[in-house]
Amino acid sequence: MGFPPQQQSKPGIESMMVPRPIFDNPDYKPAGKLLNKVALITGGDSGIGRAVAVAFAKEGADIAISYLDEHSDAKETKFYVKKYGRRCITIPGDIGYEQPCQQAVMQTIRKFGRIDVLVNNAGVLYIRNSLLDVDSKQRASTFHTNVFSQFILTQAALPYMSPGSSIINTTSIRAYLGSQDSIDYSASKGAIVSFTRSLALSLAPQGIRVNGVAPGPIWTPLIPSSLPPEQIATFGDDVPMKRAGQPFEVAPAYVFLASDDASYISGQILHVNGGDIVNG
Image 1 (cartoon, helix red, strand yellow):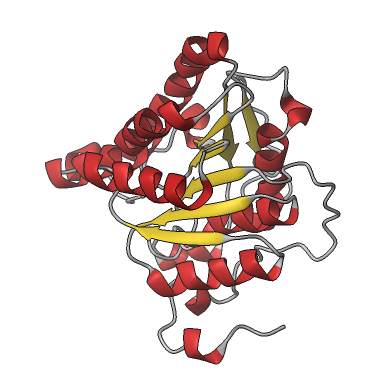
Image 2 (tube, rainbow, N blue to C red):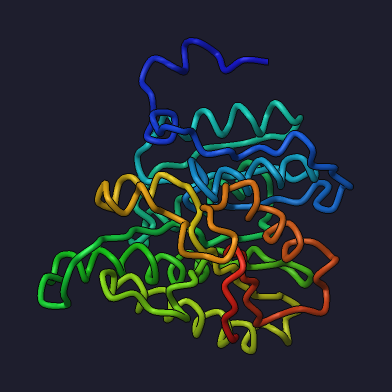
């Protein structure tokens, strides 16, 4: 089943990557773990977000995709969600601000009536040689997208979530190992770990679980758009498995945390990183 030609006329970032990220595992065996659930996924147009949307759809969830402005990528993700028999809406906007977050939530509620799973996945990365090279604009952009969006969107979505709902935040291995050339990114991802743990404690009485996933080197549009060519050439070589991971290899961690299989798990971070051993 090919991608519709009319939607290929203006390629998105992911469709232009060489090689293309692998977001759909043909050997995945769904078991209805998210049957008739509703998931709102930020950054769902490409990369890990797309792989999560596809895996959730295979497990029976309807999907709302929040994304910035990569409309072609979002349409392609929507195509694959519908290919697996589930409904999907795409919602553009900068979720670092209150109004787009409210719009994303309200469009999801108008279409599906509730939110069972919130995946805070949107993120940006900038590479700089020194902290002195991180200007105020970059610093604001990093925390605006990586951290503030999670606060604001979660605040907007919580009134529509019920006992048994799940929130999953994307952090990074860099929150644990640090990174000398992406200090602001690593700091923002560390903030997400603390946000996840604190929110889990806060929402436990309401029966809402909050967890996170800390990917290692995963081949997504964030990499070629952020890293210099010499780092792209060796991307993933420094982990024990000696390769970068693919988005479809991360998605099952989100399926697990979203499903009842993780009913006794909250405030935790799953590490999908090619074998690096980290604490926490």
